[in-house]
Image (cartoon, rainbow, N blue to C red; front, side, top):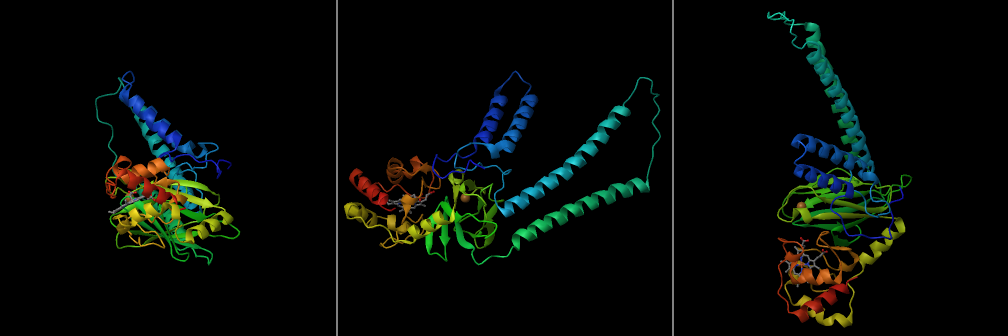
Length: 379
Ligand code: HEC
Ligand SMILES: [Cu+2]
């Protein structure tokens, strides 16, 4: 597909356009009093499903993925997708057969004016029919169970090649921490992983943990949801076959700013990924021009919550800031990482993300400018 392109960049849309349009249509129709409410709702629902279904083809030329579950891009996502189409087909056939028989009986045996008032003959017990409607459903359920078990086994027990990348994902209220233990990298909110060539697979294996409450890692094109649960380790793996930026979202209500806990996965070509890795492995930049801002940062509570490798800052409550400027968004996709947004964020996080767990530090304007300039030097 040609819509994957690294050069152009747009701010994060929460939903893909067609889904948003479907939802807008739904609301619009709900307000439309001329239609009967049921008619309007039905039409809106139909358009919502169509929008979601064609979501994959949306946004031509955009580097951002859709958030469609109908455009799987990894082996696990593809097998889950195949299974759901199979289950949907089987259940659709059952629906058509049952609804067809029902409609047929209702029409054929409806009350007629010529009918006598006597009750029709009552038939009890037919071993053949009862066997049929017990055995057939049992067989269907068995087939569905086996098909599901096969997919679960294929995904959960997949062998891990030596070239696999390991990432520990830690859910926080309301941001994502990404640690690469083998590579010595700590970053936040924007996950970088290599594209996986089926001939030489380089899948990424995620260990999912939580620092506080339940979260759920969900990037629809890369796979199903997996929860991040305190005191438990969950796992999933991704082997995306095409590069691009894949959008996702925390999918388990985790508190006030759950809706602004967005996810971005950059699937990089091998050279781009290794360049990113070596840039992230460097210690923080030391720029003499921003000495004042660095002093403000290091003498304020900032360092209790944030880490900057190579300085006194080693807090872990908030995102690591060593390479803050390598990220295109702030606060888990809540805003674009521009100088103005960064300054506003430090001045008053609530202006961007009300209820975020970073306090407004009440810095003077001069200190605010200095700290912003310092953070901007952290490339
Ligand atoms: C009490 C802990 C705490 C203190 C103190 C604190 N922060 Fe934060 N900070 C956080 C948390 C938590 C987040 C993540 C917020 C979110 O996304 O919901 C955050 C996010 C940020 C971000 C965005 C990072 C990213 O990658 O999106 C920046 C920049 C930042 N803080 C700078 C600062 C500066 C500068 C100071 C000092 C003036 C400071 N913080 C003080 C907890 C803190
Ligand atoms: Cu969450």
